[in-house]
Amino acid sequence: MVRAERIAPHMVRIVLGGDGLDAFATSGLTDHYVKILFAPEGVTYPEPFDLERIREELPRDQWPAQRTYTVRAWNPVQRELTIDFVVHGDEGLAGPWAARARVGETVRFLGPGGGYAPDPAADWHLLVGDESALPAIAAALEGLPEGAVAHAFIEVDGEDDELKIAAPAGAEVRWLPRRGRPVGQALVEAVRGLDFPEGTVHAFVHGEAGAVRELRRHLRTERGIPLERLSISGYWRLGKSDEAWRAVKREWNAQVEREEQSA
Image 1 (cartoon, helix red, strand yellow):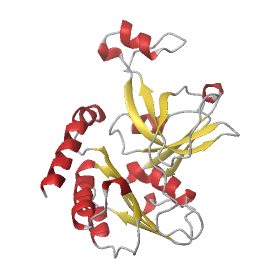
Image 2: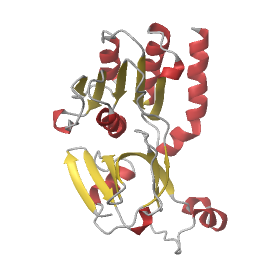
Image 3: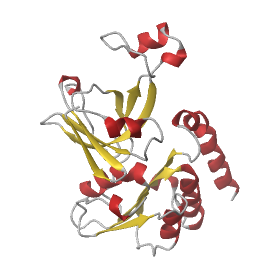
Image 4: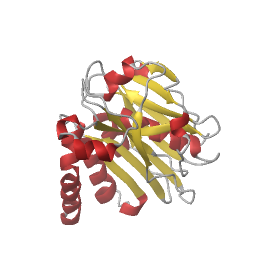
């Protein structure tokens, strides 16, 4: 790690560098992500680090935990990878780690993966998410050409968590501070209240799974947006750890699809 900075009350930016990034590359997507590996407390691994060997030789409770984070930026010239972490005190695993991370610390991760970039043929773009989706939304806005039409709704804890984003002139970015309201409520209300522009939309909707489920139902059944025009998924689920959410996410998504088919 080469830099660490608290860019908002609930956001820490970590910049990674070094020889370990020599083979890292992205492919133009704006939702590239990596899976950061965290060793259980008191566990160290032999060098060179070999995840397959760890899983073969060590008991499961000594395997590293994985947390998925969107790539905020990748600089291929300086070989620097930027990742933003949401931090809410001692809550969770990755956030508290990011809050106390120090320059020189080794960070191990898998990836990158990804699957979305704004369609240049779309007439307009809809970008919706909470803090977990903020890096991908920011990257998408910054990647839009001048003149692109976009509506972005970003829910954050409070006004101090709003960040500067270099969006094109045709993009309207609305920050939605929760101020104690339930997570996702402001997003659902904002999208429901939007007067959709004419033409074909390409939408990116990610965040807390319960809110995303409501938004998907609205966009698919009430607005009639085809699934192929949507990048939509629950990045996390209120009340569940990352491991618990991953364990049920596939069935959750299948249930949502069944509800759509029966609507």
